[in-house]
Length: 74
Image 1: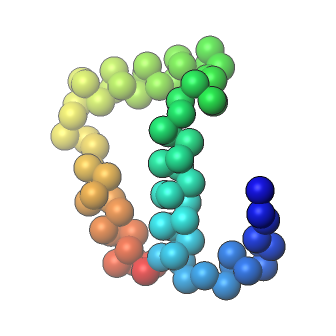
Image 2 (image 1 turned 60 degrees about the vertical axis):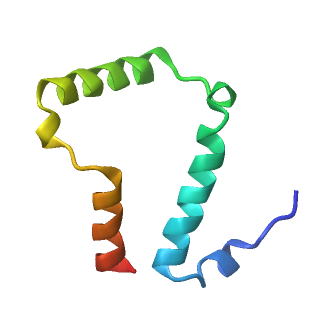
C-alpha cells in the first residue's frame, strides 16, 4: 500500500477532502463484513432506524446534505 503524507492531504481543498472521505467510506461500505459492529453500535443503529420510521420527515436525503456542505465549505 502506498502512503500519502497527511501534510499532502491537508493541502487539498475542503471539497476535495470531503470527496476523498466519501470515496474511502464507499470502499468500506462495499465490504460490510470487513467492519463488524459491536452490540452497542447495532443497538444505536436500531434506535436511529426506529426514530426515522416514527418521523421520516425529520431526515434529509444525503444528496441534499451533501449539497449544503459543498455550498458552505466547497
